[in-house]
Image (cartoon, rainbow, N blue to C red; front, side):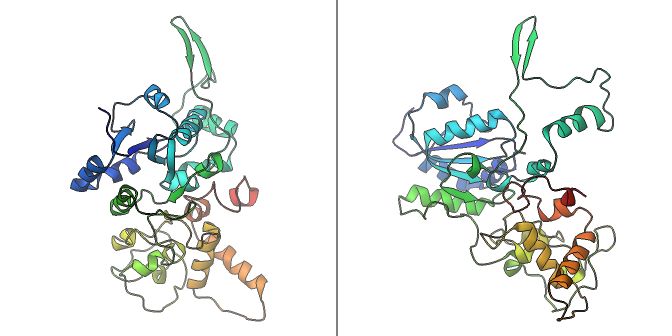
Length: 335
């Protein structure tokens, strides 16, 4: 039944479903969504089809939360369609904002990825070396699959977006705050604003673990030490990125002995997430400092920090490889 309430849509591209779970985790506050919006399109929650979306007038959807990475042509097609139908398009969650975990694959070509999955992965048996095809003829007719993109871009690099809302996933109370703001009819922030997080506070500022102003003797891997409860993880040598990551999550991961992995993105909006994380950890590890050595010593210290981490790319660029300075495949990063 048609209503005069503003229309809301949510779509998952190449995603895990965590963003939808976070929306559901608003618990009883989700009733506000039904009160304030006409929820018209969401493949996860509603029995809505692409044809229903295509039939809507352009610009008829007030707000669309688009989550997930753009891994296939279908994902890209849906991004373009929802852009056309929406007044406000929000890159929702780390995958849409900056590529997310799927974008770690940007360090390999499409052919390398397909070869790994369909030929080389442990347990794979494919003697005929068969790969998925965009078009296949079968007795029943023609079957199609969406083209696998060579690289995952951020949503804003594919279509214009009004706002970015990072997090893996965004926290429910932050989602609710954004929905309430849109429903209120009040003036919205300038386009390009990052919503649902802090512009000035880092995760460290929200963390309640004790800071003892001690430098860690060295970085340690998860298998090498059991952190002392309640004490700053970085001061114990655990690679926690809370110093360089936007706040807004409430420091939930450090509260349960897990280091911040940087899902809310770099604190500096113009900065490189990985570079910020490396710099922060390099400064937190005890090392002799020769002020006369200058840049060369800083570079050496940063390299030592990276070498001490089991998976540098997955640690420092876990969510941001579509939207960072190293961007394309870099052989030094691969190594």
